[in-house]
Image 1 (tube, rainbow, N blue to C red):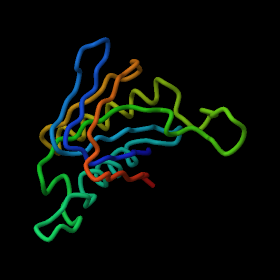
Image 2: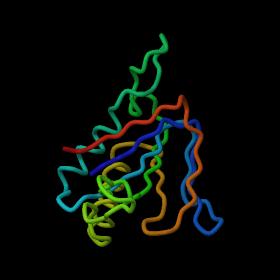
Image 3: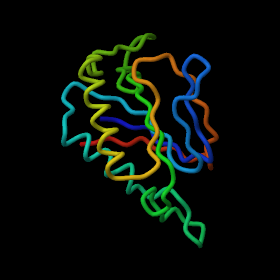
Image 4: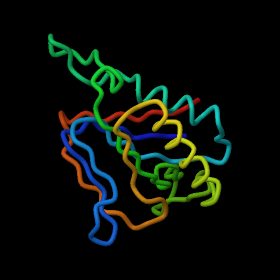
Length: 146
């Protein structure tokens, strides 16, 4: 599993002009599932997202995690993060999980997140989404569950 996390002051996801998920300060995580992903990868990715220290402490250093701050977590499925872009001018998606598998493990990640952290919101799997965010920093990191 892969996540592109962004520290945000606010973020929301719209589908057909309806807001389906919204948070204030916290993390927006764009998540991709790969063919070999399973329970261990979902748990590890969540652990990394909740524990990654990207929020400032009193001295202005990035020493606080989402768990420390209690901020929101907006999870958005984005299979394109798993694209193979090493050659040509068109991405290959052979490195992304098939849709059924992707949905299963994304939904499992959401279940785990909601059990571990308050304020978890989601986009809509497989929908054409409009993702709105104010990146705070900007602060953006690529995380892998390996």
